[in-house]
Picture (cartoon, rainbow, N blue to C red):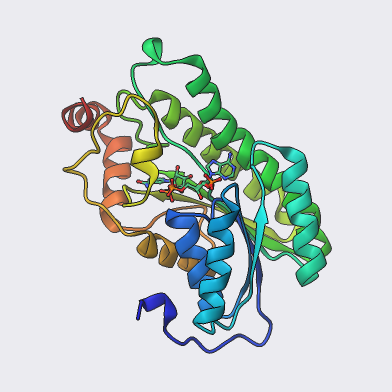
Length: 269
Ligand SMILES: NC(=O)c1ccc[n+]([C@@H]2O[C@H](COP(=O)([O-])OP(=O)(O)OC[C@H]3O[C@@H](n4cnc5c(N)ncnc54)[C@H](OP(=O)(O)O)[C@@H]3O)[C@@H](O)[C@H]2O)c1
């Protein structure tokens, strides 16, 4: 039995979450965790067979929360609007958006294919914007909500050969920071998670050069990150790392940029 299958006391008023990129890795682990906690989850992604399997697994395990599989590509604004409309039709409200769908890119900027660069930016920046723009009116109608943007420690700490991915996550950080104030009158909270290296399909699906995974960088499980998302919903941080070690790296990067750049060059060079 996995920890996400353990029994939580179902809440009296289950939250309704929409999670993008729920077909694998962090998004899938988060969908399982919140369904196990008794929340209702609209799980989106392009590989709909995996979303159906997620729902079947939740039903087999008698998880108290429901999973609603919704096929949606985050780069398509209409698809995200549709996903939110279907979530409202099923659950009548939207309390939480976890904008998680993303793709990696690696390689020297000048040698990278423009198609890969564009795909990365469209997924990681446009995709988050389309998801947030679709969710805001539904949250307003629900009386408020919480938007969690899944960024990376690569946002504040971009290593060499990850300039495009780092820039895409720095854009997510800027969006989150501005929206936190902008959406306060709507009672919508906004938190950005700086996730550290996590063992998912991310490395194998990354665009650009195959490159090596930074093997000396400590790795998390997607379930650990899902637990971090649950904590972020409780604590409402502006920015948050899941592990203290990632927080230390981010702090060092701010305080001693030249030192950290040398370290990153050794790890990723
Ligand atoms: N793994 C790490 O080390 C790490 C570290 C820091 C931050 N992150 C961030 O964490 C998030 C989740 O990544 P992961 O590690 O869980 O990787 P993953 O296992 O590869 O999952 C990525 C998810 O994003 C979805 N996705 C990608 N492009 C999409 C699109 N155009 N439309 C809809 N969904 C799309 C994928 O679903 P479909 O392909 O089925 O659509 C998949 O469910 C990403 O934002 C990533 O940048 C990861």
